[in-house]
Image (cartoon, rainbow, N blue to C red):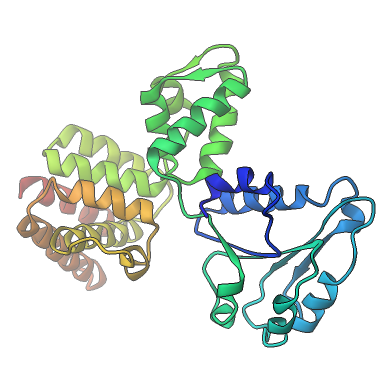
Length: 316
């Protein structure tokens, strides 16, 4: 089930004996665990057990066999279990304690869990789609006593690269600033620091539009971020290589994993790649490789190299 379905599910009588919370969004993962912890109320000191890197599956099973005290359910949450031998857990899951809810949690399914997956209810904590995040921002801002324009919410998502942990933290700050008021794009721009990834995307947008003024502003912001020119050139190369790949390859489910990025980055990359021709993307990638070689061979200083790279990309 999706994370968005979990709260409703846990209010039903169909609560399962074992779950696997997995996905790339740390905010959603922690929110899911919070919902499971609530099942141990009203006496979580007795009814909630959290195991980090358990020594064996036997220890997990023994923790699950305890009966709840002063409540209906006992909850056992297990994390960092990639090296734990799970063989003995098969027997427990064939006949689990009916009053215990066992919850495993990791960013991605671990190899040692493959034979147990069919016995676990999966809670998918992958990044939420943009429309869902926009709705969440609108609801949460009202809870804080403020409101936010849709364009400002869109900007907030982009500035935070779709990371819900950052979106939540930055929204709280913005709502405190505009208590009982309306959060605008100007407020987001003034109070929220864009991630380096967002700035790379913004520079790429400027190059695609051949907007030299915007490119200069973004480049200045990048160099003032504290990141070295060599690091920024590396990030630009990775970004444009990713755009080239997404431009010439039909999208498939494992693309984020194969590229080593989050789904949000692939989705944004696909949108941006459409603003270039594959030929131009290839030229930009080749130019960045040559620049990297020139820096390492001492032919040019790194700061000048970064500026020249952007100018050449604008001129292509």
